[in-house]
Length: 375
Image (cartoon, rainbow, N blue to C red; front, side, top):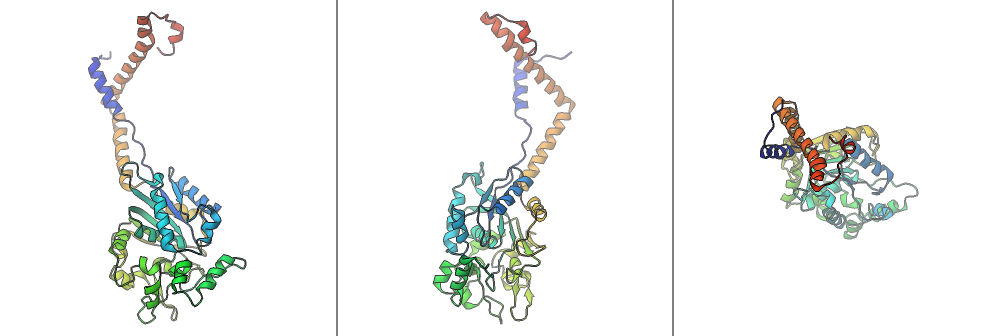
């Protein structure tokens, strides 16, 4: 026979059990996606990539970075514009999107995925945007160490041809550095020292700054890069669009000899200008190959990257698994099950009270046939 408890004891039990609901799985971090040169934020291919990210990590909020609300203008802005102004605008936009904010801390912590030039732009965004924290930065075919030559334009791509024409013999002028986007990550080197040329270091509107190549180093930049948990850089094995393709790994390539100097052998790494050495020592720097030509991506490689680098934060995932384990143990414990039986009995008494006793006290007519299912 079940032993009946006093009302206060049962109410205490109810309070205890209601405080132990089944734990909810943690939400994945929001994902920023920045597209490449000649692309647009509302392109079908980019949208399908975001949908894949949501399929791999359900509940992911995807924010497609844009520099204009119109797709055509956004594409034009990949060729023409001032990167400093564009990044400032993106920083303001993501701060104003409340769906990117953590509901508990109200902080802006996200994952980030960059395609081609969008990769180094995301890195620049991280370095320059106050209040932004990125857990994992993943880039495909990006130009972190700049480009040595401009890409070939399509026959009828007049926007691309216009940008290329402006750059010719004028790369380091203020006009070009403020107007032509690819010129702002164009990089020439001193073949003797292997360092950036004087013209590049002095006049580059974007790359020499975010790579901390100037004499005065920005410590905030290096701190932001070192704060990443993972910085995964994918280089396409057959890439002939990005010259040199090794730029995607921060490698240096001598245009005369063709010799490649890996990041870990470069001065910027040894002296840790950008926090990459510190990040590497903590296991956060990841170098990966991708088969095929520039931006020839398939769902398989993207799915693997999304599983490995995106999703819920590990600390919350571990917390959830621990809580879930404890909850499951409680549910199979005989004593816990006994308490559940008591609570179930008490809930039934509440139903009987509300459906029979209270109506009877009010003088209502009680129809037993209507109470069968509830009793």
